[in-house]
Image (cartoon, rainbow, N blue to C red; front, side, top):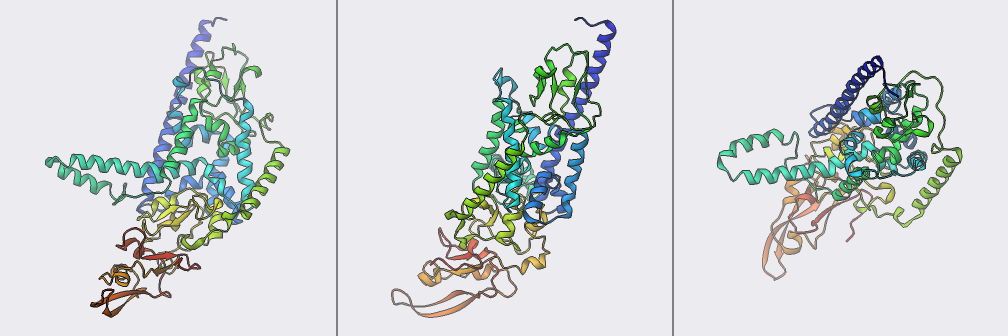
Length: 523
């Protein structure tokens, strides 16, 4: 059907307006991603208030709801998630198409050309994200937040903290090392280093366990775009599933007018793949991310977003009552099996938690976002692997051999968006006992080799030091007379900060080690 001159002009006008809207949407996406990264950078060094730097996580309604169900505690900061819910009830899944940092990254690496005509998975696969959503909320009812590792914001933040930023730091160091061979560049490089350290990059290289795993998971999410555009958003994202169900009653929803020529351009441009030719090129509001690509490609400008009252039709891949009950039962059984498995009887000797936390509280509140790990100035906080069992996977723990709990820092508690680590003042934090130091006399230089070493005593930051020095005068192993100072731990003073273990000059395992408060030494 040919367009009349009037219709052609009208269509061109509508498409120009649609193009402006898609341009605005892309600008909002990129600006939001830059703000997210900017707040991530600003969180290190505590230059900005914690309420600002952890804002993205507190806007995440899935994280806040899961934390509420698991801890039975309502946090005032959680009310910010209501803004996201309100946005969804008006504009549908606009969060996914306009604001989500992971969604923006997936749009930047859509791989549309590389994918070609590859067929996406069947529509029934969309039910997977609803299953994951139900599993997360069901597990939260049993005070388990292990599956929050699948939340898109925690996934992005954790990858930035443990993989991307340390790798960027290594690249900067390598570039500075290479350029420093040119004498004329010395002042420029020194000025650059003062500018970015510690405000953007750490003063010393940091190391994180599992960095390749986090990077691999993130790259796998991006690589799934080779199968279908926005594969993660369509089939796997639990937050997208949550917001999608709310979008069933959103006020603004996509609609196709009566002038549609069934050209199929809108269906081909839809990154969510939700425009159905069999239904007159209508779309499911639970799957539409309000990206407006169809609005721009429509030759007749016949795509509209009018107000609707009432709920949209339920689709075959949307969760049913049977599915909800099945997932609830399966989740309950899985958690029971976790509790009865051998990993539940974990050896907590080296499971040292951040100041002010208890293991049970942390497991029922921590959403695995990694913010505390990123802000730790010494990289002492590391994601737990096997030490806390499967239910404690990727929760924060202290590894003193990699770093120590800075006596002058309380950043982890301040930045935690769900208060899994209490927001203690610096004075309160300094009184928290997170562990006790023990000396292995078979490895300690003064005890085992009769050599001179008082590093642990010198490094102890407490006003009344938790390590004393006793003088030994007598024969050494060869019978020669020696006089050496031997360290002794004053247990009632030790708070377990770990600086003694970190600074211990013994090769390999430190001669002084910090153990969880209720645990004794293993020797």
